[in-house]
Image 1 (cartoon, helix red, strand yellow):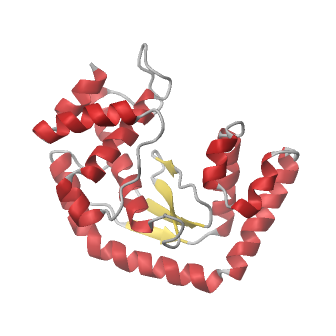
Image 2: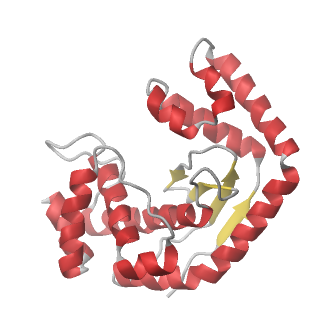
Length: 234
């Protein structure tokens, strides 16, 4: 079985662009944004045009990376060491969960971030992770979480012809995303996985609680991904 090898990078420009993209996608949801942007940058949410916001975030990111350069480098170095100790176990468990389904080919990249949001790009196979364990953030848990998404969406497309952007009749527009997040919660709460991989599981995203409960019940009774997905896609 071929398993991906993650390449880890520190890149302030990429991090700034990610923050700007995240802000643009969620520009009207201030409660959501407040959870993911540091307190000292939240003033940008109101009263600034796009050009000003871009300038402020770019300058802020550059300044923080310069001030914390040594700390960020040390943090990422430690994270790489921790991941190297856990990756074999992670891939063994995901192989069990997805019944030997192969990981999609490609270059997997993890970018460190000074922000508190960690988006991913399933198609291009990159994600963001916190450079340190602080404010309830867990870098290794984040890496596990995002890597699970990559194989989950590949599996979903191969088995069901569904993508992250697919719409299900009579369901919310983001129903596939909800299923993916709920599935991650179920797996991260699964005893064999939780024991080996995750110190603290992330609570379900708002609106996915019922899905998590339903999927968890099926998983606990069967440990069969087919039955879990059938329960929420039928």
